Length: 375
Image 1 (cartoon, one colour):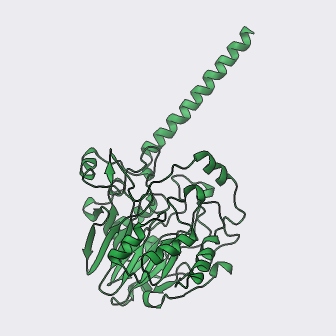
Image 2 (cartoon, rainbow, N blue to C red):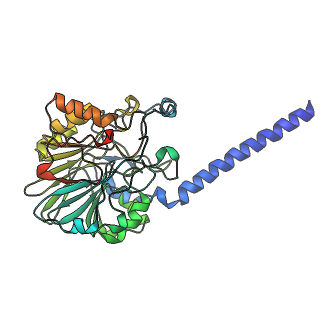
Image 3 (tube, one colour):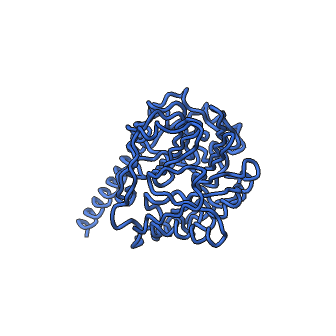
């Protein structure tokens, strides 16, 4: 018995030591791997304390309370893989060459969807990237479950022309990608971001002078375009201990003749009506429509809510985004867009569903329903 107890004791020590070693390695990896981003300095936190959205060292959501998701239920649900979670064959995307991007009238407005929430907007002769996530994984490591669907990007980041402005909505991996920033940073004029997000960009080698941080309702004008940082009902964080260290937002992009709204990620709430009252009506709203679940309905909308958000914004037209590239929730990959189309038809609303890589002329986007995902 003594011998058995001795063996059990050694095994226990070995297991505890091994677990402790793994935890230590994990902490070191998070602390040292560059893809996790930068840390907010004490000086910056003192600056952010002037914001109504910042309290006790973190940003807080005042739009409406967010329920804490039961992590056990979440992991259990995600473990049950939906049979249609990913396309069964490669998606056909359209190819865009750099020459076609350069030969465009400065008096017109058009967009190109890269899948998920990433767009290139050409407006007033400027090239504006919105949440450019061109990486293959929505995670700091290569997880099969986080891999992009099988399709070619319309154009590789290295082939893009000079980008005047990059806009980010928040710092989650499916919106802010380390490798994408590395590829773009030397060909970008300005970065417009919510409070705190500059820490990540600076840690990845972006010159601080290129970055302008915004609180909600703050705006910047450039070349006749007004960029307004507006509220969203979401959260932020890239590591184990940095939840709500940076602000999250939506954006309004407005010039003398066109008004575009970009939702970023958001649950449904009254902020859409408030934005619509202040800056609407919009010509086009790019609204998240995918990666939803009843367990996290406070921070992501169901498709029917996405359509209602467009109504609240007083938008003439909506394009569903946040789908078509990754599986981040346990529903069919094309379910969200089909539900959005059905709800738009029921409410007699304009909706457009462009292919990945398709040019979207703002004044020709109405009712452009193309069920390319059924091909």
